[in-house]
Amino acid sequence: MKVKKIDIGIKGLKESLEDFAEAWEKLKAGKKVKKEEGIYFDSIDAMRSVLTNNRLLILKTIREQHPQSVYELAKMLGRDLKNVNQDLKMLSEIGLVTLEKTEADKKRVVPHVDYRKILLEIPV
Image (cartoon, rainbow, N blue to C red):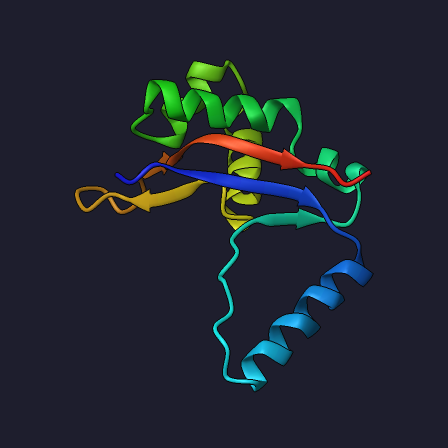
């Protein structure tokens, strides 16, 4: 497993469009464009609504304890399975968790966190 870092930041619509326009111009000119990976929110409030304390605890628990199913993760956290599933779905949609179905039991899903660090960038 290759361990990577995840960049999370706050980027308004104007800045996002400027970044896109700059990349587009470079591509049109035949220049290489540096691939940037990250998750960006348009405000701190939007970020906080997604990266709640419970969801951050899910990430930490997966990373440290390696649960072999969502059910096992919910037991480790002392939380309701339905709520953990909802949080995992959100975290998976934004790319912070990988959910893998097992070959032996197609209903069992094993959550993975393939990074050690989340870097948060907030422009001032």
